[in-house]
Length: 85
Length: 149
Image 1 (cartoon, each protein chain N blue to C red):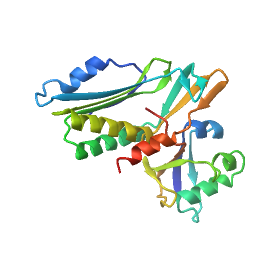
Image 2 (spheres, one colour):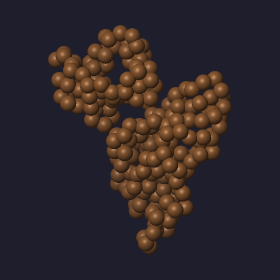
Image 3 (tube, rainbow over the protein chains, first blue to last red):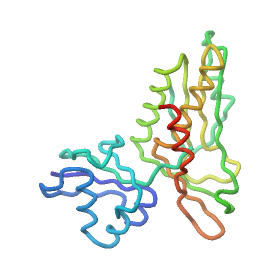
Image 4 (spheres, one colour):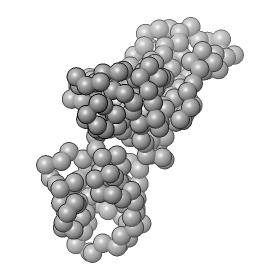
């Protein structure tokens, strides 16, 4: 399955990347799986995406929770809680 | 239901005039104008930069406005949110709602702002005397949104 990843704000800066296309293995099925898969890349991913960090995630530009299933070709974004207004 | 995300400043009088022009049903226009403070969390703010998620931000604002329209008897709604570099005293955000009577417009405007604060993807980075920092989300904003559930 292929995904289009997007990172914003403090995550974008800490990871040094704003977007990337990745192919993920079959066992990565949900948002939580994807987060763990990226954490396995090691520094800085393990720190930036650590379970202790409060993050938000969007699938195809809709806010979703960690149990949401991934879809082939989806745009998946990780970002910190929003601070507009 | 216009939604505008822009770097440029806006003229609140011109925006209100356009929003209610020709609509003789309107008896109330409620607006919220958010501006940049020079202090936040006990630290001086010299400048800030606003980032957003092109595409998703517009969609989430549209959802917020649709919910407000479904919930209250209101006519027109407007959200303008600035992005990019801003300075203290600058205008950041304008929400405007028109209706026949003030009660509906007041409630809808507050609802839209509370939702925008917790659900629309915008992020502020402040330039302070001790360096640049990303603003942390406030628990009080989540509490404000929870009131509407």
